[in-house]
Image (cartoon, rainbow over all chains, first blue to last red; front, side, top):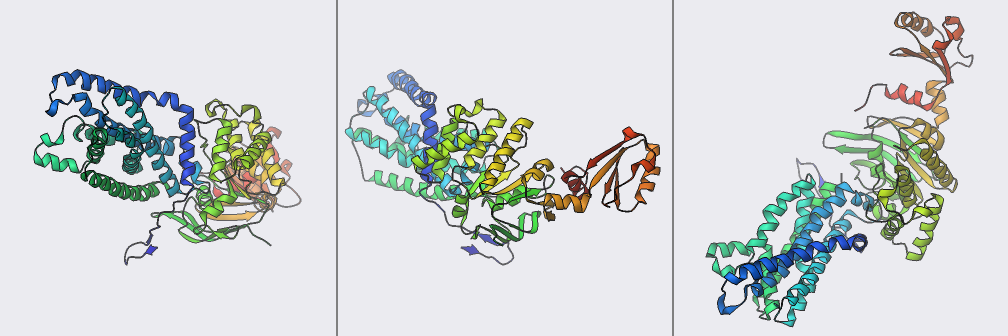
Length: 268
Length: 306
């Protein structure tokens, strides 16, 4: 569709051109991951393990929660929600940036029948896969710590795909505007890391003043943590469907923005 | 006569900068067509439009009868693209690079396997097939990039400066292979800075300058038409130069160009040029055949284009 505005240059808005070939991009990333997995596996296991030990067991000894809940049990589902966020955001952050600028992988791919929109979609699909892989590690880890009360927690693995797509899309939007790989640090320091602390992983949000609780509603990770708490404890509520709907809407929005923003960067 | 690539009044603008300024050309099936020109002449931009990477600002451009704006996927399926800068996957092995690439074209694994063996064989990469990309020399990387472009059995190969940065051995090997492929009937588009390369590989060339095509023809025709049969270089001191330039310029059938301490005399007339009449010391006079580089420099100037 072409939109012509009087007095302005003509610009064409092309609807997303996505095909099954996005899967080819996903396969490419999978193949590289399978070659490198030994070096990739350390990070998602060591960090959560240290967090569980230091905060859960160490700090947890000093914390008293309502109903005598152990602190380590409280934070475990939060970690299950938050680490996949990291994996997905890092994948379409540093990972995509590196493939785009340093390795020129995107340039090589779009010289074939694969479109730019396929590349973007494949990258986000891969970010979701990384989230799924991380969720699997961490579920094993927190189960080993004896913090999982409900068999429903198994659902958190397939469910990791949704926040994976969401954070993959959000992160790729930022990457499309990044001037250098180090400028991605702003995004992670100012946007991703604060979610780690403010999304209700380490303390219940209802302890916060009302305005802060309202603000937390706008933080994507809050909704992920809510749903995961429900799954780990077995106390699912209708409100959790609201959290899922929130994530679906935000994912769709940022996916479309990512397509247009990346096109702007890649098609010249 | 059939045409495989047709451009009419093709324009590419970036804001107020016009990179390609209304060029028209036709490429015939099976020929090697060269784009020459200094940096910034618009060669790579033209290539990017043909390969459907860069949208056309105005004019028309079709590849194998398909419009670049409407059918990019179908066009890209016909092309074998060799980019200026290597973009191989450093995390994968030589063979994996080709496997991954073959999937982008939807080749079934058995067909891909055969093509990969064939391409590795042709470019003498069979023994390197399990090596990591970082272990390859720049010549090997280039060979692999060209081998990769053959995976979809392309109808048209698009080579953007295929031998830039290679040593003479590697360059000659690439040339041989490209001539072999041309012999197999593959149409080739080539950009190059090396006039020798263009003269060796191309059936027809265009020279681009500031976004326009300034001349078009076979390498032989262009040399004959613009630089003549032979060139005499006179290496002279400052005092001698002025006198000699005046005397030479009066002679019929020659073009004279003085650059720093060298005077170039381009001889067009069939009678040749009698340098002996100038009574210069022999070591100051060099006779040679005119070549494409003379044409290039005559038409695009000797100033550096930044």
